[in-house]
Length: 465
Ligand SMILES: [Zn+2]
Image (cartoon, rainbow, N blue to C red; front, side, top):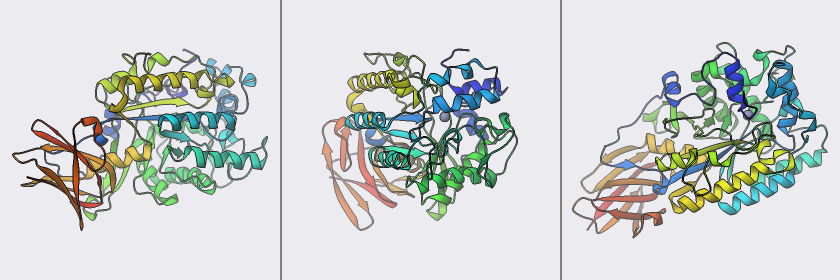
């Protein structure tokens, strides 16, 4: 077993479950989780990706405030799995802290490049302390400054997720203490080991979400630690829907759990959609990653292999392969593997990957955070699409920026008008596809592509001479 292997995969293989948590194919998920309702969508008008670009997102797991999860998780995993070499690493030599100076350096660089994604905040990281109370080893002011940095620097471009409560031991929700027994059934990465009800799972998720609410960190989704929920995939999806909406006023709850490999689609999937006719549907959006972690690993001491995402020229690598296939490029890392125990090797490898992708694909890609992706795909899948004599009528349960629709140009094609409620707007024609932006349209032979800010309810596109 390579030392760089993702803990998710490791735990599951050794736990005797055939599919790795992050290697579970979308098809298998679909087979186990009901997609629910869908509207009628006419074939000859199609909702494309936003601005007809390829979405990119960077999914960061195992991050929190100050606590280096690489250092603090290993002894707790080792206690449960003493024979596994990966948990025998010299964690005592790893720094206990990933400092806020690094969060700032990382966050500012990403903002300068337009990078967006998801950043976990584990609320009771490896049982060290409660982020909404005290973190032993740091002053309360240090903790509050750290939370404020996440709120001000990261939140504009990153969704914040709890990655369950501790990412190590299962907590007794009545006492807030870790369960006494140490076994796979009391580790969050492999919980639960038997069927649990939606309510029981939702209660556990809501507990984690409430701590982040106390910290002033609103969430629209959750990340599962490792194999959390593997035995209750359908219930987990519904529990995400319930727990996120119990704690926050969220229209479109989402979660990250799965990694797609091979030829599978990396597009998000909508689960448990119901109440479409009411105009206010319930749903859960499942957003997968399309890569493994090939930066510094969850431990932080793995040598980065950036070429596995994209080589210097952006001609090979998994991320390049996905983009060339016209698929979303959602890629994954663990926060200790950005800091790399202070060398920042993982971060530097990530910077190289981002620069290569930008140089190779420039205006064909679009960075989005996970809640933006969830909203776009919820709208893409749940908007009814009906051709009219002069264009297309879209009826959407959600407002959505940058909605991008392709339809036949027909014989006309002088101008394109958007009618939404009382509002009428003349969309502006652009000459190049890459100039597509909200309020514009582009003509290509016998088709046109329009991009506009979709309102909840009816949006009609009318072609006029
Ligand atoms: Zn994790």
